[in-house]
Length: 142
Image 1 (cartoon, one colour):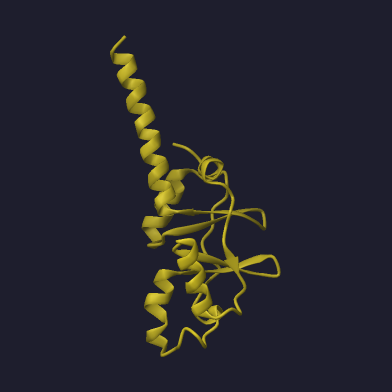
Image 2 (spheres, rainbow, N blue to C red; image 1 turned 90 degrees about the horizontal axis):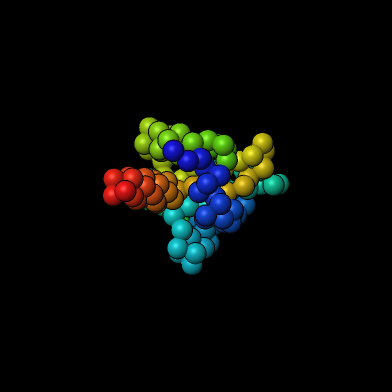
């Protein structure tokens, strides 16, 4: 099974991040524009949290807040679970299913280098399985 760096090689290292002080409404607008399900929250160059559609759906109304008047810092998930480029895809699957999360920031030391979603993991596994099947078919047909 591959590693996180294999996903990033294909996907790239582009991440969308914002500061914790921006309003939830602006974050949701950005997520809509970029067609993404989560934003990384960075303060002074350091990853401090993640904000996802799930955070919005589950926390905003429950706290009696308004998206136009609430900063991300009040709803974001602080100290998100992270992986490194050297973690295996299996590590990611175990973390995502075990912790019920869909996004894993990728860090190398204290440097943010990417983001892996459950969709990225599934896509990678499917591609890997296609290659294995093709290899086995070629082997059998010789």
